[in-house]
Length: 401
Image 1 (tube, helix red, strand yellow):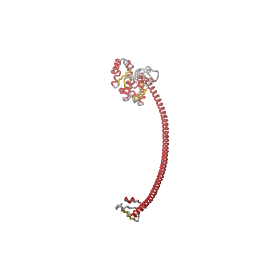
Image 2 (image 1 turned 45 degrees about the horizontal axis):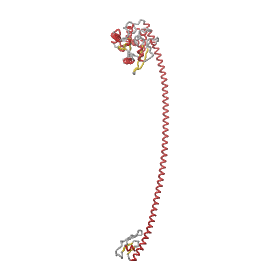
Image 3 (image 1 turned 90 degrees about the vertical axis):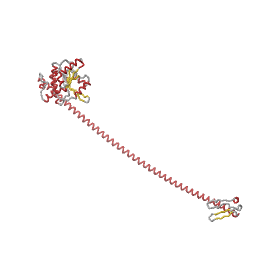
């Protein structure tokens, strides 16, 4: 709030970044009414309400008061409480006199003393005035009870309005922490049911009927706007519900399709697993059959080899036996031949009287040889058999013989 040209719209445009906010006067109804602007900063939702300035060229103070009263009454009925009111005053202005003092008095009555701690008295446009002059005017505003002194003593705060967004947002962040409360005019109009001309702020109005008519006009307009807003909200809610239903339906359809796809994929996967299991089982059976066949072939070859080995052993044994029999026969023939030769030899020796011999019936004999020439025994007893060759020891005479 504040006088016309105090910088209210400029401040709101700076912090919200809105390009559609009118700066200064424009011959439209929007710039001559209370208008709310919302924005979000650091997880905090702000709603700034721009109001028509006092001493407006196009509206008298009674119309402005009626509009403010209608807006505050409507918001209070909607359970909306204000965190703070920033009252702007350009520091370049001269002393508060005449209508400016009357408007400040009306502002104090509009707020009520209980709301003073939530009032921020902000001086603006410090760049357009000499610093010393600005400080003197600031001291005068603070110390004079007719100006801001009485409000400061009851809890209001004086600040220099920042000319940058960061400082402005910091100021609003401090205000957002204040306890929300009702203005005096809100309690008078709603809780006490008073007419606007019976409130503290409207008691001094010269044209009571015009003031009440203006308040009623603005109240009706606010009610119509609220109805339009409610209808728009209902329309948007219906559209949102329809859109939400469509989205839910699409989501459910997508979910069903996803489930069907998952089931089909699962069935396909299970079929693939079964097919692979069947192939593995067939392969294992084929491998088992092959191994079994290989074992049978191996056993067959082993048996054949063993049979061949046995036959070879038997053949070898037969050959050895045959060879032994042949060798035995040969040896027997040789022995017999030798024996015959020896017998002939001994027969000649016996006839010559060189040796004495004794022959047994089983081809074993004992031979004792005595040499007539030397008179000594020529050898030792030698045993003979059918299968062995005799060993003979003869002297020189016998050998010569």
